[in-house]
Length: 435
Image (cartoon, rainbow, N blue to C red):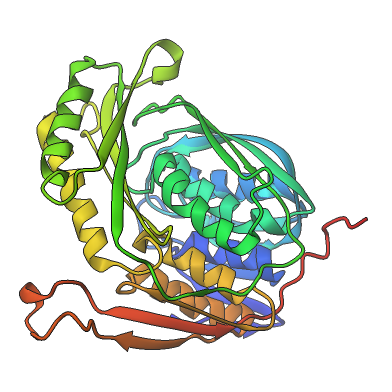
């Protein structure tokens, strides 16, 4: 549903795409108000992980203002200034109904990285007003809600990190691998190379996994460092090349080390049918580095000769779910997911198409173009939000593969591609200190 503009405030209804709206509010400086947040549910309003996200945003900004309605079903958000710096945050591990705990947790994170952010929640928790502050960044420590993975919060920091006043140094604590979100390994392997295309110089861009944590209790910790830039360069990225090697990592937390070896053999058994250069590491964590819950999983990344990275991941079922996960099945499942991602093709992994679109839109006032695989539903919604917050429109052109003569979906060698073209708005980080 498109936004309604009232008194220069973007008005939304419902909790859908909550994170997208917060993120773009912070970058654009436009206040938002969200009403009817799960107002028809038995447990209405913001959830813990959503509040946790707000707290994280507050940590890296200065002046962020948040007002919640008495019922918790409405929220007003006024963003502050991105300041960045050192941040430590414990992420929420749960997921529920209403303005969830992890959504409130996200608001807290945004509040930490901004200055002047204002948040107002309604009495029932089903409405929210959000006025973003200034992105200040710096050092931030945040405990993420365990309803969602650390990736839910990390993607926000990755998107706003280059625009903070101070280089971002964030410590996030919680679940490192979650079914609902990208894992920290996938962000490191497939998302950081995309950001590097826009900032060029790798001076301090780092993602370090200190310890891993599986759901439901988490116990993982990562350190994310991101440099600041005054502006992003335009990008022309129309070639993605052929896959030349496959790398991966298998982790085993509080389970037998043989599980990791069985996953490796299963995944390699599939990928060696396509190319010989396959190497998978094992990370058999012990003690405090193994988190608080047992589990195992795998992340695979395919690198092309044009420095494009495709990533796939699979993990065991959450402890207590009553389902049994076989290591051989996990390895095979991840390998097939990677094959599907390679089939989709394009210059970026499908999970990070929206980040590519964001950085293209915020680049210098020049034409940027990139060819990606079929657009995900999340990316399509994000493009609609980019138009509402920044007035940026993309030209989307479907490119049919020259290798495919058949119109049958099952007979295609590769998926049709989408050429994304836009003119950047010339977004300038006015908070960045200059000599």
